[in-house]
Image (cartoon, rainbow, N blue to C red; front, side, top):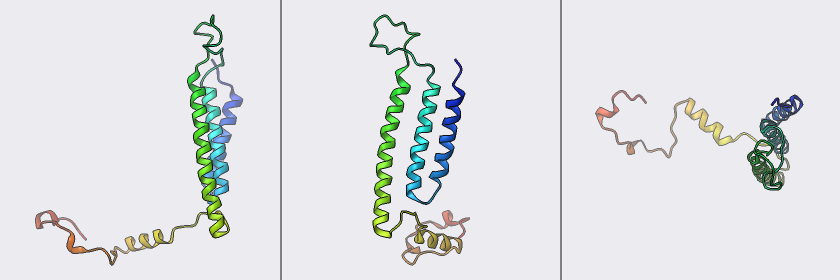
Length: 145
């Protein structure tokens, strides 16, 4: 069995475009990226499953070598359903973001940046209570602040 080279190239292009779009900040591009990535992987599953055969339960006189393997089709069908759920979720996030901010671009989290700056300066939060740390002198040796 030799895989169809055209389908392999199509799957690779779809996966590459999908990954590129997933790295964007705009949620609508992320949705398109999820769809492209999913379709690329589904094509790859079908290419890897081998040549198509006859359905095992429709024709009674089919030998095992002539039957198609139903597992790849079942996995692709499951992947399609999962992708549909993910697209619906990200679409709802994009719509809510558009309602609140007027755009669907994901912004950097200001609180995350503040925490990173404090960690770089080795500062602790005002809510952090240093007295609650319970370490004996032997355990505390070698631990630097």
